[in-house]
Image (cartoon, rainbow, N blue to C red):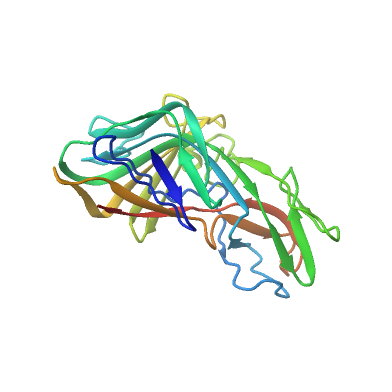
Length: 266
């Protein structure tokens, strides 16, 4: 069984069951945001800020390790990769919850080798929920991702579908809409919006997302390796609070933010 637990999420598989991992920062709606450092400040960055969401649901279809970069070309190339977890229907996990389990699917132990790259295939939809207090007013997410400032409001679930990394689909759609990259502590992340065959989107109709991480420290699988421990977190990052004006003192909308993971062998 693959298990996630605690504030960050622990993923373990015994040697006989396989080794599995996920290690990516995915930003559904990229903005030039910083961390919302205060609860109930007078104002926030006009570009928005990141906070911890109450709900952050993603659908994972496949995860694995690679000996070369699977996103070095235009489309995903898995010829050097081993899928360590696959689920053709996908499995939804709430990264913001206290516990989640990867159910169903197939786990495979990769061959003993050095893997400088890792990847994840997932749906391009994100299930979110949260609230934020700004300038004396509590704002709650609504089902359309707008902000409810009614006294005593309760946050509602909303779904964000990622069609473009540039914030909105260009006309015509271009390469910058379908790809993104970012430097992380764990390495350099690259991502592509794709169709169901993981061919990079050329129009505003993506249905899937694939990310690949060029690892700062390669994963070395040895015969004695029992499993891989992966800790996920959306703390201070998984939700974007977006103000309505340049003064940054009224919340108008909620959006997605990045999640990250750190991993180690055991």
